[in-house]
Each structure stands twice: as structure tokens, then as C-alpha cells.
Length: 318
Image (cartoon, rainbow, N blue to C red; front, side, top):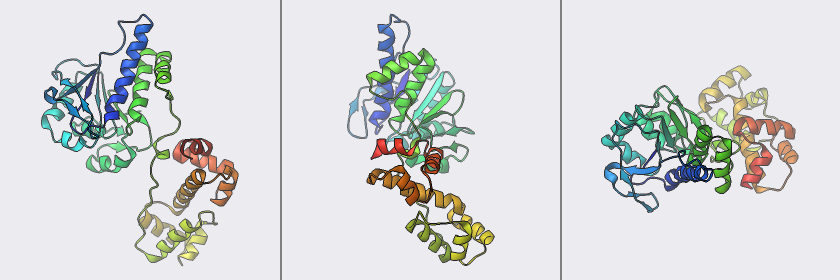
């Protein structure tokens, strides 16, 4: 197994999976299975020491020859990812090695390296939520999903979300290789969930769409955001914009990028997120104040949009 380092790599993208795989090897050895486990190497172009984005220095071996059979190659991200993508030798090595590797794994913006090597063409992939738009823009042949913590992008390639998501993916791969008991033991030693609840959305900063160009639509946006709990039915919003409901829906969707109902739901979700972390009010009170009506309606909305219940969200972020 090779974990690739480069100048400006994100330390935890590299060290997190390293600890999981080496921890699994120690666990298997303790069970008398010394022939199992992983032979883990941190490698870089020319075997040069790797300086992380925060200044941590990591000793590295030279990259193995691309024609050798490598079980798994892990490509982390970090502030140096763009420079690494401009290293033709590294990108060519990734492309050539993938032909003989059992798995290619990216963590965070390491997905950009994998895409640069052409291994994500026609695939669904994830990356850190803050860089999902960049990945989609630069590689339109890749279907980018910013929600999962990790996913299997192809029979050979796995992609993980930002930073600690590499640990989640590494635990999942250990579970695939050696079973749940080994993966659970490693997770316990690292004081981690074997499977963390929810997706990336729960960690992402609120995303507010730009203001519409047409004043009537901007007025509607401001009204919804100013009073998320209001009765924002399409006929009511259309009257505020002095349009027919059908024409309003078409114009609003063109200007804002989503239908009025979806926009109202998203604004209400963001308002509820803030109140869950900033107040001690019950979920029932927040649901009524933010326009969901009932706690169950708000719960279903949270699970659908964020992959996690309001109670779980509050416990994690309050």
C-alpha cells in the first residue's frame, strides 16, 4: 500500500488513513494473523521529504515503479494539490500505476489528482464540500456529489470527502478486507465511529444563492429569508411579485436556480440549523417557528437534506 505525499499535502489526509491501516495490521498480528494486514509506505517523487501545508515534515520513500503491482494507492489532498497536478511525472505515474493497482483511493482534493489522471471520467465522485464546485467545473465528465462522506466511484476507484473522511473510508476498506470486528477494534482504539451518521452537508457552511436580477424576485427572496416561518405558498409569493403563479414559478426558477418551494424549504432548514445550535428551544418550538409545522415534518426534511436528524445535529454542533 502506497500513500502519496507531495509538498503542501494535508497532514491528516495522509496520517489518518496511515493510522487506520497500520492499526489494522497490529490488530491482526495480535490475533495471530501475522501474514495478514498491510505493508504501508509513504512515498513521494524522488523520495523527497514531504512538507505538509502546516509545516510538518514527513520522511518518504521513492514512488515504486509504475509497472509493479500495488494493492492500494492513497492520494491525499491539501493546499499543494494544484501544484501536484502540474507535475506531469506524478500524474503519469498515477495513471500508469492504476492499471496494476487493486484500488485507487482519494481523500479530499486528492480527487482532483485522480480526475487529472483521467480515472474519474464518466464516474460519480465526491470531495471536500468546499471544492465540489471546482471539481465539477474543471472536469465536466465527472458527476460530483458533495454529500457523501465517501463513495465507490468505479470498480477500482474510491473517493472520500474532506480531511477526516479519509479515516472513515480507510475503516470501511479494512472492514471489506478483514471484517467488521477488526475495523470496529481499530475504530475503538482511535475513539471513532465505525460509521459516522449523516453526510457532508451537516458540516458545510450555509450556501446562499446570489440575489436575482429582477427586483420582484429579489423582494420575494428577502421576504422568505426575513420570515422563514411565514406562509410562503407559491400563490402568495406570486402575488407579492405581481405575477401569475405559473409565470412566477418559471421566472423564479430561472433567476434563482431552483423552484420556489425548494428555495423556501432550504431557507427554513438553514434557519432551523442556526436555532438548533444557538438556542435551547425544543425541536417542536423551532419547527413551528421556522415554518415546518410539526417536529416530524422538520425531522423528515433534515434527514432528506442533511442525512441526520435535528437531535443528532444539535448534539454534534450546539
